[in-house]
Amino acid sequence: MGAMERFVFYLLAVAVLTTDNVVLGQEETPSSDKDWWQTAVFYQIYPRSFYDTNNDGVGDVRGVTAKLQYLKDTGIDATWLSPIFSSPQEDFGYDVSDFKQVDPLFGTNADLEQLFAEAKKLGIKIVLDFVPNHTSNRHQWFVDSERGIAPYRDYYVWHPGKMVNGVRQPPNNWQSVFYGSAWEWSEQRGMYYLHQFAKGQPDLNFRNPAVITEFDGILRYWMERGAAGFRVDAINHMFEHEDFIDEPINNPEDPNSYGYTHHIYTKDLLETYDVIAHWRTVLDDFVRSTGEDTVIMMTEAYANLSMTLRYYESDDGNQQRAHFPFNFVMIEELGEGSNAHDFKRVIDRWLGNLPRGKTTNWVLGNHDKPRVASRYGVERVDGMQLMVLTLPGVAVTYNGDELGMIDHRDISYEDTLDPQGCNVGPDNYKWASRDPQRVPFQWDDTYNAGFSQAPRTWLPMHPYYRQTNLLKQQEADYSHYKFYRDAVAVRKHRVFTHGEFKSRAFGDWVFAFARYLREEDDRLDDPYRVVLINFSGERATIDVNDLYEIRNLTEVYLVGTDSRHKVGHRLDAKQVHLGPWDSIVLGPISSATRMALSFGSLLLVVVFKFLF
Image (cartoon, rainbow, N blue to C red):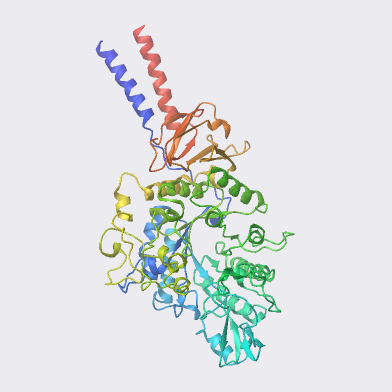
């Protein structure tokens, strides 16, 4: 072979190698025809456990500010903070004693306003937790209400109780979420007060218009200082039946358990939706008057599908309510034993019932529920994150789930702090307590996982933090974190922010869905992506055309940590091989690949002519 032949074959080899190792560029940024929140990735921060800057063993507001660049680098659009306001901390901030003051445990109001300012520079929105159902019993409103002082006398739900055989008893059989009666006797007032959660969390009386007005002012106060929205906590507990009648028995075995009754008189009452609509007006009026970006409201309610969807708007569409209610189907209805058919059924049902023109959301975990890796299994972490980040709508991540952190289930009863665990005693606390999913964030493998230099952290560090931490995953060739970061980047593409959706279960364990643009949307020449997730440890081979017609070759755009595929590789759409726990995103042959293929074809022609 002569010199010219050797040169041509060298070029041909380079073209082939280039084609096999295409590195895909950044995904296209979506156009601005949707509001900021509609395509956002929200990141829930549990401030106690995020980052401690004053070495008292508890995370703080300055700790969030210090880690904003991490959020930016990861691609996070917005974060919402679990409560940081003044509180005795009986329920770790959900018992608020002053809604307009940051608790000294977390810092100052100035620290929070600095967080707003620094986040704005980075293009990150800060959403605050908003807890209207109850206050702390140390809130001045309750102190005055217990004394019978106007106008606070009727700010809370009070009842004289009933006499049974000459003994005064609570007015009914309502139970607290945290175990035991929902009623507590006040010697000072000579009446019972309602607390659907801890005894130190008396329920407010929202049938008193003055209470609603108080919260209007709280919302405006924080919007004026930079809050981009509010996550409304436990909203479906806001109203109770006015006649205080007994609820029907559900489980007679334990009268102190929250599961003792069907909660038809203490949850999901229709008046709640009117208050949400009122607060939506408060937010929208603020935006109109200031010209600021949309301030959003997202509601938390563990309710059935029908009651949850009502938080979007009234039945006639004339009353706008929350921007979106949290969608908890991934937490409440699906788990480690769920198969591909289960995922398809639950996801399709939710999307099929979504009110027209509304934006959905997907939540994998939070501070109240076991972590994704513990609930679904570590092997499924990539698949679950990929699903949530590429389904239509908003994606919500709980801090640490991007690393595949797992629950710390070996916390002793002596170290347990959560009242939900403490109240059930040492025999049952492990599975009732929410402490295992609240342990500090694992930044690196140094002392206390880089979370704090304190001799003792507020909850014990996870014993395996040296195996699972951010720094280790950042330095690895590939990891759960790097996959999560890449998936966040992939979702920026218009096909994910604006595309249609259809799904398919391939057998019992491969769940797949296509995101594609309508034919009239001609702004892109690559109008589809296909997401494939293998939820089993078995191999599988599928024909993608049974979901979305590709016919011939398709290209790999993203792969999970367990995948043998490589980004940029081309696959036969009729025979896509998935390994155990595989997670991949497929799309059209990219322009880089097409150029390489064209170059290769041209070289083949040159070689053919040169040789023959």
